[in-house]
Length: 242
Length: 238
Image (cartoon, rainbow over all chains, first blue to last red; front, side):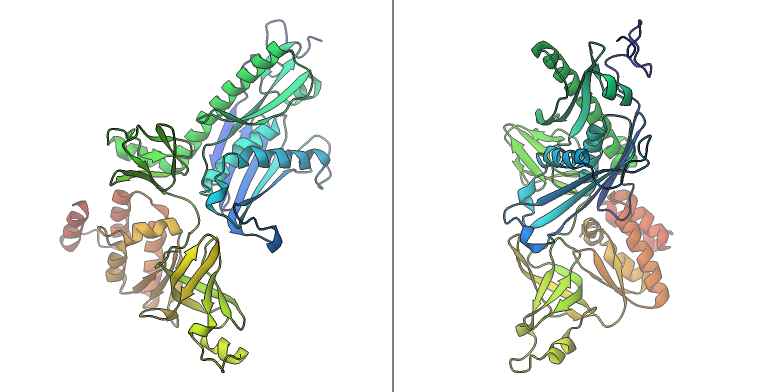
């Protein structure tokens, strides 16, 4: 105990308890996809790509009243310290499912019935909190593909490390900390679309953790908006202010 | 108008307008007293309705639209046409081939796989694939020229009634453009003209801002000069 947070309250990577890792977001990085985005959060490096809406294959999976959304979260074999077998693991299948549900809440699926939408997320380098970073990036890729959405979805993790509630766990904190709690959130609508938790928290700790997570998501949301504005309107803003 | 938040460029979830005086149009939705955007785009207000003109997204067919497509398959009933949309288009065989002579050879003689066609959308709803027709003036199989692809979101810029950029390109390159609402454009003319027109169309594709675009386009077409061009710029500014 006490080795993940030192006497002065600094974490293993020098951050304070409520500080997020350095973030970089980019929109429209793939030419062949209908929409794409890239995120770096600490040492996480993740690419998200969206294809669609398009016809559903195989045909019998077609939903008569809404869009079929498929999502694949995948970690590259070289994304972790020891080679990860390329076939989807139990964990990746689970993350694919919860990601799809977290994003589907934002997508207006009944606007294009009988169509399919593919969301691919590839983790190139992993550093803890990758499902949150993946949702954040995938939501930008959806906007880039022109998929109608109620709001952008931002997601990050909070947790308990050495008895303290901290924001945005890194790899070591994720593995050796007491609690890991990823949260996805639509800030404009004030709706949570994903909430998972590993470990135990008291009710007061949970409230503090959730509050911290939502603050983290709002911070990410601002960065998402900035990334979209930079991609689409950077020179336009100057044009308007003239 | 007072309800508009003055924001011109929006991303999904952004507040477009508040209050009750405006109706929520295309690519927006209302929650209580607020109207939010569902797309990355530019806000427009017309007749008490706010809408967001999207900068991304696939072509969604509308009845009456002119589209350019490629025949991908056919059977005894219909041809299937790739119209660069979320759905494939359908052209009915019974519209074009007389009953009694609807053999495989007779059908493929009218339209074959790989043919480029200019067609009109007869009927479309999200519950039914778009029905196309190639009977009519200017419609039918394309026998000459090149197809240039741009984003379907660039087409309204090209056909803008004030700027008339398609006419501008036609005059400057000596080509004839058939603009499909789905972003496929048939260009007919001399090889040099087609190359120049393709370059101009790519510019329309990449620049969403009207003022910047018309200036850049005139430069690219080499009509940014004094006499004739000055007159056109004035026209565009009106």
